[in-house]
Structure formats: structure tokens, C-alpha cells
Length: 254
Image (cartoon, rainbow, N blue to C red; front, side):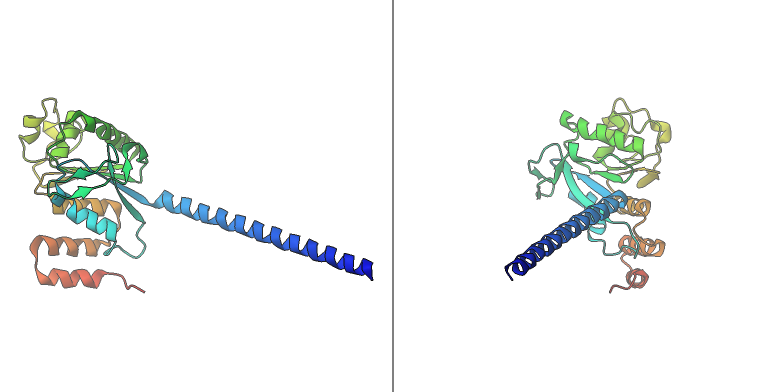
């Protein structure tokens, strides 16, 4: 009887050990699968980095950041988009409008690949040498197929680095870059338009914020074509029929 009891206890211990091992294996596999899914998602996710610097022109980023961060008008199968602020350091910066931004990450945290997007806003402080690091990063992104989108004063920073010498671009008028960038050599590539998209380089003057946003969104492919056209028509004209047209293009939400 005692031996039967011992055998039963031994069997129970073995079963308990087997169950624990099975649970451990299942948990390990679950974690592995989750990490795999996360990695796959990150590989197709667009990472949008907004460069934050003192006197940043708040309004120039309004349209594009609101749409990319909220995803409110994204098409049904749109790729995921993450939006982060990046700066020279993690110290707070003060925008031209008086808002305080605490950067999410530093320049070294930027992932340099074809899925990364760098937004360079206008500011009165672009002549500070410390911003040369982000312009170097912009050059790296362009070389691997990542997107660089500069507006207003940020175009001067690109011009100073020679990044506009051989690429179609625009800025705040024909003589603006020559006035503020003595090394500028891209005159024959200058286009007098509010915003100019040349593949993975999108530049704009300070009055081109809406078209700049449209071209960035179009390049990322996160809106349906008819959604983007209706969105642009509504915000550029304010006419109510374009708002209703915009609403009708949106996919059903469950």
C-alpha cells in the first residue's frame, strides 16, 4: 500500500513537472511570436521624426503631423505610422508660438532606412552650428531612400550642406536661398512653387504648408487617392461640399 502511495506521488510529481514545462514552452513560444510580429510590424512601419529646435514654426507642421499621428483619414490597409519628436538633446525646446516640446528621442536614435521620414520645420535658429548633426542625418536618409521634408528656413540648412545642388526644390522665393546660403549652387534646380516633391525630398516655402503636407501624405501612401484630393480641396478652399466628399471616401469603421 505504501509503495502504491509512493508511486502515485511520483506520478503526480512527474505530471506536475510536465505541466510546468509545457506552460514554460508555451510562454516562450508566445513571447517569440509576439517579438516576431513586432519586428515584422516595425519593418513595414513608417517612422516619422519631427526635428524640434527653439523658435520652431508651429503652424508649418500642423496639417501633416495631425494627420499622420491621428490616422483619422487613413485608408483601410494603410501602413502603420509612428510620430516622434527628435532634437539635439532631450532638453525642452520652446516653439515660436510659445509651446514647450520635450523631445521623445535624440538624433542618435533615428533609424536610418527607407521607412524613416524626417520633418525639418522652419525656425529662426537654424544658423546655430549644433544643427549640423541633423543635416548630416538628413543626407544619410536621402542616400538610403528615406524621406527628408524641409520647409522655410530648414531649406537653407539643406542648401548650406549642398543637398539641394542637384535636386529639384523650392523655398521662400527665388532669391531667398542665395541671400541666406552663400554656398548655394542649386539655382537651376529651383522651382517657383509653394512645395516641390522630388521623390524622397520634399521642400516648401513657409506659405506652402498645406501642399507640403499633401505631398508627404501622398508619398507615404496612407490615404486613398480620392480621400487625399477631397482633404486638400476642403482645407484649401473651405467649401463645404469638399468636406462631405471627404467623409464619403472614408472606409467603414467597425
